Every structure is written in structure tokens, then in C-alpha cells.
Image 1 (cartoon, helix red, strand yellow):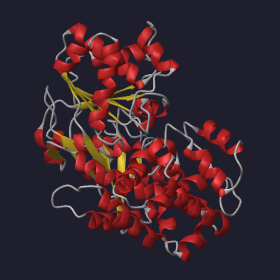
Image 2: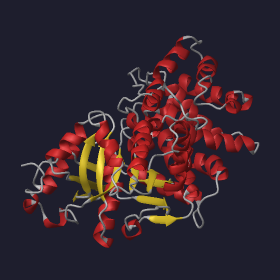
Image 3: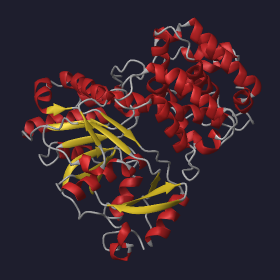
Length: 482
């Protein structure tokens, strides 16, 4: 029997949704596992504690697999929390509808103009915003230009947003907040810049300035890709089959800039932190948790380890990550008041060591060109401005350079799932297959590496040194030597 509203009486009472089916108040773009295990849970708990019509209409920009699964299940799905000593499963009921943007873009635009919708949230990954990872500037490609300059239905996330805001203006539907929940530095500021640029191109700048806010956020929960085992665990706990089940670690955090002109859920009652400035939290999480996560993923995948926990157990890797945190990351940022970066890093390493998560190294390693700037390169840039050579951050970049060559230390293939995959392969093919040649080729990716870093002789020397060690000895032996 499938998970549906009619099947809920047969689900254990402690696993059932905490609210009745809600009326819509939020549109969320990006219906992946992270959203379902994070914002959807916080929002249900907020409505359970504080009331309000804040049901989430989920919009899938590309794949319709999750849309179809949730529609068949009356919008219900489960989240299994995986602790080192056991698991617990709950059904989440904060969904108020599901749409597939590629099939129904005009329906999504009309929904964004509905006065009942007062918040739009996004988890569309870094590449969904069409911003240059190195500079944050808009990448006006043919698809986005067509969204802006023709009457066709929008096909990009920025195109959907700006078309929806234009429709909202014409409908006089009131103010709205656009809130990025993606791992972008100063994500609220970047969202504001994106929409302001597009608004100028579509002559709605004044209305956007007066009616739209862009709260910044920091989101934090490790959510691995769902597997057959994820579905099996949920089925055993619930007694019904859930095709949209996800799993996650016990830890969950959400820091939100409190800037919502048409109201918001009482997220603070669900454990979120409401603040006037989330940027210190953003920097801490992006550079420490996400930066270390990527480091473990690249080094672990090259060494042949399937999961983050297994990779972290390699001799020398945990020690190298501690030095990365203490010597490179901590001096590069100002943490939130009362937070110690090194202590936070220790908590991060303990979370990554949770063997129940099964978080795959190649999943974390995907889209590296979009992630490296905010996760690692900003740390390097700040340390170089201070006159230091960030040795451990250079190891992370060298590990990425080793990873994108496509072959692990044991000769097995490594996937290159990246928007710039073709450019990476072309630059590598045109350069000598030596550490110097690889570093030269990849530093030439100008949408990833700022010229100040690409032309930095000391940084280049550190990259060549690490890449030489990784190629000569392998990742495991290099780390053991450290």
C-alpha cells in the first residue's frame, strides 16, 4: 500500500504529519531531497507550533520524477533521521501542491502572481542562478536571453522568477520575499543582484525595489541521495511504501534574515535562528562544513572510497582536515558571536564520521566548478591577501584537479558531472599531462579562478607540489605521509 492521506490511519501515530493539509503560502523552486528534509520539515513544525497558512507548493524546474511521486501520495513523503545508534521516521505534511516547471511554466508564473503566495524559497543548486561562480555576475546565456527578450514561456529559474514578478506587479498582488536557501556566499545579496539586474531589463525596477525583499539564509543538514535502502527503511517504519522517502543526519540548522514584507511562518518555534545578518553563519558553514566536505569527497573518491565516512577514516585525512580548519579557514573569517571556528570544525568532522549516512563521495564532488569558489577559493583569496600561503586549501584544489582527470588511483573511472565538463576536458586534452600542465590548464578556467589567484606564483607552486604528490604516490599514501 502506498503512502497517501487515506493510508495514514495505518501509519504508526508517532510517524504521522503534525498538521492538517495546509493552504498554500510559499512557492519552493527545487524539490530535491535537501528541501524535503530541511525547509519542508521546519515549515511543518512552525505551522504545528504557531499556525498559519504556509503550505509549500513545490516546483521542480527539470525532472518530474518527484512531482509524479508526490502527486500519487497526496503530497506526503517521509524523512528518516539516521543516527549512529538507530533511526526514526516521520511523514511530513507541509506540501500544498506540486508543479513541473518544464511542462507548466505559465502555471508557475500565474502562481507567483497569486496574493496567497507571500514567500518564494529556492534550492536549485549553485548553477541554477546563472551567476558566474568567480565574480557573482549574471551569465546571460541564450536561454536566459530568450526568457527576457521573447514571449515564449520561461525555461530558466531566473526567467520564471522575473516573469512571475512582472505578473505579480500587473495583478497588484502585494509584496513578496525571495529567499535563496542554496550554498551561495551572501545568498540574499546575490539574489537581490540577480533580480535587480533582470528587473532593469524588463522595466519593473521601481516595483521590485518597493515590493520585494531578499532574506539571506544559512542552511545546514547532510542529506544523502535516496537509495533502495532509504525506501526500504521508510517502508519498514511506516508500514506503507513511500516513493519519495529521504534520509538525513540528526543535525539540522537554519539561520534566516528576518525580512519578510508579507509575513512568514514562526520558524523560530521550529528551532530556526532569526537574525538581522546571517552572513557570518554563511561564511562559517560554506568554508568549514562545505569546504571540508568537498575536500573529503575529492580525496576519498580518488583513493577509491565510496562514502564520506569511509574516506574520513583514511590515515592522515582527519588530521589534514583539522589543519585545514585551524590554519586556513579559521584565520580567513569572522565567526558568529560566541562561535569558535575550530570547535565548529570538530563538530563537522564528527557529523561526517556518522557511518549511517552513506553519503557518496562522487555525489558531493559533482558540480565542482560551481562549488569551489565559495567553499575553498574565497578562503585562499583571504589568506593570500593576508600574506599567507594556505597549504591545506591548496591540497583541496589539487585534489579537485586530480579528480577531474577522471581516473581514480586504482584505475577505475571517476564521473565528471559538471556544467563545465566539456571545457575541463578540452583544456586538459590541449595541455601536457604533467602536474604543471594540469595546473596551468585548469587555472585558465576564468569563470572559476579569479585572475588574482590564477596568476599567483606561490599558490601555483603549492598546487603543483600537491598534485605531483597525489599523482606520484596516490591520495592514500600522500595523506598517510602528512
